[in-house]
Amino acid sequence: MAAAPTFETLTYAVEDGVATVTLNRPEKLNAFNTQMMRDLIAVFDETDGDDAVRAVIVTGAGRAFCAGADLSAGAQTFDYDKRGGEAMAARTVEGAQRDGGGLLTLRIFESLKPVIAAVNGAAVGVGATMQLAMDIRLASTEARYGFVFARRGLNPEAASSWFLPHLVGVQTALEWCYTGRIFPAQEAFDKGLVRSLHAPDDLLPAARALAREIADNAAPVSVALTRQLIWRMAGAAHPMEAHRADSRGILARGQSGDAREGVTSFLEKRPAAFPDRISSDLPDIWAQWQAPDFR
Image (cartoon, rainbow, N blue to C red; front, top):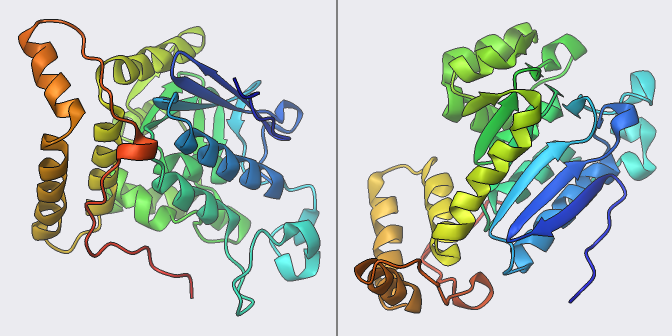
């Protein structure tokens, strides 16, 4: 068995098909920096490449989920040209600076495994926007949210101008981003950003129960296709795009060992043992799909 990978800014563990990723800079309230961006992108490469992982939970160590960008560089925090070096999260060949939060959310967008956020405390700035590309958000009753960019002289990042209105609507997205105010988890729940609220000690057990429901009952390849269909079609111009993709999916999956096992196990009234694996059996149902370039 291969040793579990180690990361500088997070911990990673897999148990019974569920991977738990814990942001681990508690002394900094899990503030986001370039190394955390790199570690998180790498951990999603790890979960996608491991057929034993059926679902992913992301949470934070200590009092916060992620209190936003690490501001230890002071006034130059967001001036990448002045900071240089490790602050240069990535550049295109033309020299244009790409937003590190966006590199992360675009990687989460491409995940082949379902991603559950277990928001244990403050989720501010990129701590809020990184969650938007995750599939389901559970929050502690002590969690707080804030899209604080306008109060820092910035604009929303991490592709949140696409993700946030899809989740809560344009009006709420604009109010939260215009005001930049910190608001309680109850408001996030009321507006649809959060799926459920939990007492602090109950948060991770609830997230794990949800992950188990997926891991124990759903075919991994079907889950991966479902995730692609729902997220990619959120921006489709016409339902015909969904019809093209899901028709190809039904054709491929209908011939699969998973479909035979799914029907047989149902008729025999027993749990299914799905044989297919994402690493070898994920069909390409996207005749014309291509992720746009950054320009």
